[in-house]
Length: 304
Ligand SMILES: Cc1ncc(COP(=O)(O)O)c(C=O)c1O
View 1 (tube, rainbow, N blue to C red):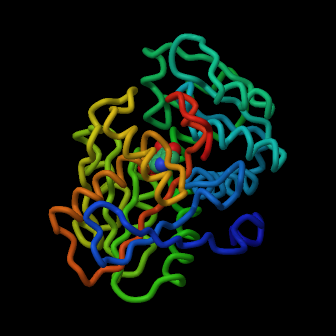
View 2: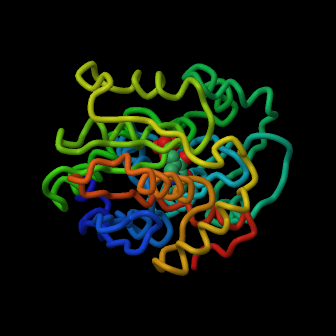
């Protein structure tokens, strides 16, 4: 379905073999280069948004409204997707008015930006709250923070089908986790030979139960685990040790990582290799979820 509407999904994104990771030994490790799906929209954002665009169009909406921070990968992708596929877009941005490279790109792509006080922004987490924030802007398809919700899962199902075709045997799929939408969508759609391990980018005690709520009963505790990551408690700043890891990963593997999600997942995975907690029979896949535009918020070039 997605591929018939969006040509970016016609060909699978590559699996790139990684070599010489700390503790890797003779294990085979691949990175699923979802960041290469599209130069502007690549990454898990596009999977989630594609599902929302299909739902919005089917419901007859031409305007999309969503929420995020001033460096949000999601709002950035939404603005660019809106321009490409003929939707007008409004981004409700958390906090005091500021201008960032992310918001400037979004404005250049035609997005209208409205700042929302931190207090009012807290309403975004419920359907009614989000509808209240968006009400002044008229009829629109509302996309929850980060592209979550069932339409988001529908887009992720395409990625799952692609992965299931690309690798045989027992697979351990590592996925960076923010809202958990990509993670839950993959758990739901992948065959049982996949173990899906989520790597939490931020500390959040409610995350596991929020993910479980997105899954049908059959997946209760089966086939997935959530892991903490180094640095997940330092929300804004990229700890120096992770910055070093990001730079050496880039130099050694030739792959740029984002400074929030994939860098933490790769750091945690390498610790796991060293402590030998991953059963040897698995082929390991690490999902590159894109987000390279956000590097600019950490003083890094957009991509290598
Ligand atoms: C680059 C990147 N990776 C991973 C994630 C996490 O995705 P999700 O919110 O679906 O868990 C996000 C989104 O927040 C992201 O921007």
